[in-house]
Every structure is written in structure tokens, then in C-alpha cells.
Image (cartoon, rainbow, N blue to C red):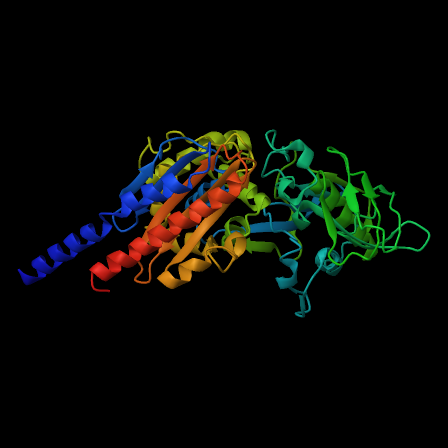
Length: 502
């Protein structure tokens, strides 16, 4: 009887402590809502799964990069937390000729310049090479071909067919195609599908190229730069290319040598990688006839493996996606899930039905994805729609399952500490709570979804989707509102803990 009475009293205290929470949140929204904004807000208690606050929570809204929470969660569910992307090089006999095939697995991190410094490579003689750059990365594979005593190959073949050949989404902002966040998406990616250039001024002439990474020396590069080093001059170096070609132009004035390389996306990475590997093989003494991309009629994954496969754990890509908000990582996860679920090349078209099916299967409710429209995996497309209620329900489902919770939490940015929220939520420290979340921003849209974890482990999921943020400083006000809501949740977790004697 005493135990039963204790539980009943504790439940009553929790209810009393939470009585003002919806009222407090409503007040925050009334005073902080940006003018003209469309908002969807949901807060869900993860201990019960119940939605304890909602404002237009069933209204489909643009999620921007909050879309990545759906994509990464689906990847955890469909591919499994132990999944590893696996890119291989294979020796394929075609009659009397032999070819080198690079078979892609959709890995967005293959030779990612931000990760190469952490890659280790064990050579055939057992020695370990570290701190690779793009050239050294391919030369390690070239040495494997030399060690296999392959004297001549008729062609180097890039095989990206695990995905379809649509690299640039039709609803992405076409004028922004040179930007890193618009990198093309392929079944075989390399160096984040970027070309990075460092230049230095040359007195009385055009700037010189100090570094080209990867060493796509076979690309047509037009140097239109100047080298005005006077104090009155401005440094205005930039790189251009056509939307569907790799004719590179170096433009602007180079006043000083660039420290960090300037990067631009490239078109059709599989073709570039095939030719680049061919050049590295030639440099290693292998005679190479040419390079190409695999045709639809060719068998995939045949031949003999040469050199160690390059593997990337799912956790690495999840972190890149949610903490760093990397769009290429998100799109590759989406298309890889489509391939896993259908056995067909991953595509954005198929994802429109496949992603809702994976989510509904996890939630155990066919009607749970009402209002969900899937256009891409990163949220860059303005064709996506999500409800705040679905978002918190999805977060609760992932966090409530031991098989998925750790992988999901570890992928998220931590307020005041990592990723896109490294410099936000400083005031949360006094509450003892932690916010793990995903930001989202495209023109007129600002969103934040994730979970707030109290010092006793109790947690709440939240989603604040803001659209139509076109008024002056509306984005800034939306971010302030997000932080006030998170702080209110943190204080509620503190009140509940105090009521229970914590």
C-alpha cells in the first residue's frame, strides 16, 4: 500500500508541476512569433510518448534541413546501425582484355577531404600510411594494381549504378549549383564531388595555381585572373564552370595567396574519377587504354577484388548529415535506403514512396505519415512537406528503441558544443539540460527539431517548423523563438524533477 501510495503521489506532483507548461509555451509563442510566419509546433514527452503541446502540429510545412532527421532515421532502421558503405576496385576480364572497375556503394564520404586526414591505409607489405590527400588515396590503390602484376588494362571503368544517373535534383536552386551544398549525388562519389584550388599572385601577370585537388589536370582550365597586389586592390578570386560541363574558369583579382582552397562542385564525378585513376595508374607504370563509365548492360560487381575495399561506417555518415548538415550525405543515405528496400538503383522518384513506407513501418501505423511529402533527403528542395507532430513522433520512436537510440542521438548536434548549434543555447547550461537537435534553413524557412534531455535522463522531443519568414529579421526572430521554446522545455524538466524530489 505504501509503495502504491508513493507512486500515486509522485504522479500527482508531476501533473501539478506540468500544469502551467502549455500555458507558458502559448505565451512564448504569442510574444515571439515573427510577423506573418506560419508555425507548426509539437512537444512530446518521451517517457509516455504523449504529445503535451501542439500548435498547428498537423499542418504540412517545409522542413528545410530538418528533413535530414527523417532520412537518417530511415537509414538507421532500413540499413541497420552496423551497416558500412563498401567501395571496391576489381579486375574484370573482357575477352583478352582486362579492365579495372571501381564499384561504388553510394558512399558520400569516399575520399571526403574533411575526413581523409583521419584515413589509414595498410599497404601490401604491412606498412600503414596516414594523412592521405586525394592523390595519395588513389596512389595507394594504384600500388595494389602494381603489386597484382597487372601490366596493362584496356580501361578504367567507374560503376555508379547503385544509384540512378540523376545527379542534380530538379527542384534545387540551379543558379547555386557551384556551391558545396549543391554537390551532385552519385553512386560513386569522390572528394565530396568538389574541385579545390589554391592560387597565388604573380607580379605583372595572371595568378598561378598553387594547388589543384583532386589533380584533375586533364580538365580545361581558363585563367582569367589578375594579380593586383596594391593596398587599394581587393581580393576577389572565384571559380566558375557551366552547369553541365567541367570547363573551369579562374576569375577575379588575386591580391594574396589563398590560405584555404576555394572549392567548386564538379559535374559527373564518376567520369572524372575513372580518368583520374587512369592517370595515377599510368604514373605507377601501368599501361592504360582509356576510361569510361559502366553501361547498363554490364554485370555489376564481377571480377577479382584488388586492394582492400574502402569502408565507411554508417555512424560517420549520420554524423556528417545531422551534426554538419551535409546535403550530399543526406541524399546518399536516401538513395541507399531506396536501393536496400527495392533492389533497384536509388532515386529521388522512388524515395517519394519508399521513405514514407519505412517510417510508417517503424511507427506501426499506416496513417502516421499523413501530410508527408518527400522530394529529397536533405531538405534543400522546396517540394518537401512534414508536420511537427510526425517529427516528434519519429524522434520518440527512434529514441525509445535501444537498437536505434544511441546511433540517432550520437548523430545530432549538441547545443553550445557541436555542429550548427555550437554557438547557440548558451543559456541552457544553468538548467543542467542538454539539447540535441537539427537546424534547418532555406529562404523564408527556419526550423529546429530534436530532444531536450534533463539531468535525470528524462527527455522531451520537440519540433518547431517556421515558414513564410519574409518580414524584416524574421529568421532571427524565429531562431530566438526556437531557443525560448527549448529553454521552456528545459525548465519544465527541472520543475518536474524538483516535484519528484530530484
